[in-house]
Amino acid sequence: MLRIGHVDLGTTHPAKFIETERALGYDPIGVFDDFRILSEEKSRQFAVDNKVHFFDNLDDLADHVDVACIHSVNWDLHLPKLLPFINRGKGVYLDKPCCGNLADIQKIKALVKDGNGKVRITGCSMIIFTDEVKAAATSAPNVHLAFAGGPNEIYYYGSHVYYLLGATLGYDFARVRYLGTNSQKMFDLEWTTGKKAVIAIGESPAKFFPFYLTLLSDAAPIHYSIKAFLALKNMLTEVIPHLAGTGGNMPAVDNLLNCELAALAGLQSELSGGKFVALSEVDESARYDGAAYEKIYGKKS
Image (cartoon, rainbow, N blue to C red; front, side, top):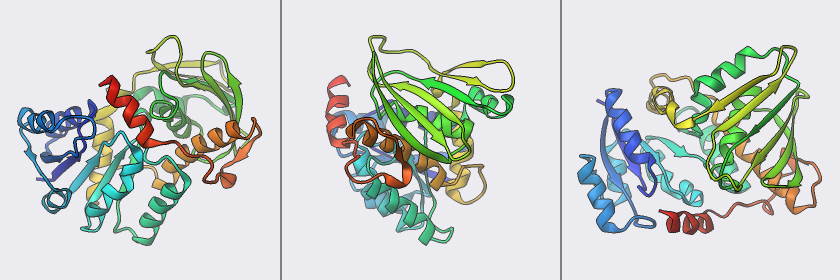
């Protein structure tokens, strides 16, 4: 039976993953946490409550599992924490966002490319596996314009919106422009195929509401209201076999990371006064700080 490990326990995701993995016939056997959000006592109790072993060392966990899921709120830790697993030939899933800067995106793409099929890394929003996003990708002929958005923090939650647009309109984002801020930040996206979208993301007076997508095409406008977490089973059904090298229908990691590269282009546009920024023009000035967000998230937990 495939053995799965989970790294960093400070969100609601690890418990839900473990429950769903067992329902799918897998064996989540262990967890590791470095107590950045949860205390040591709560982290160890998590292992007891979820009937898994608590590993005191990340390398030990990597020795005992076939696949790992990394849930660190601080996305800047994803790259160093995945290395013990891929160095042992184990597949790794990174909870979104995978990276917060250009250098980390390039390093993950290079690891997969240089691994010649032996390095299996993926990471994405489970929103791309929702029934609504699957329907949107096939039901609207010749989409001209999309409107999309969602609640809460600009990158940790806002990245969902880039992923849903990638899954719906294609991962060939061309350029992004910051449009300004009303109740949320607004961005204008263009694709290499000429498709366009306007999105609204970030903190708003209405703290929680569904992610949404409206498509204008050759047919009548179509609107979707999307609850991402309902798709966890759909996602793990594809992700785990992909990481194990036994199947799974997953977009290429290069395509998935283009969603985050598009988000960085939007940030760089904002920093440069609202000019269009092509994905090829993104540089290290565009950086979302994972450690800073981890502190904010920790205070809310």
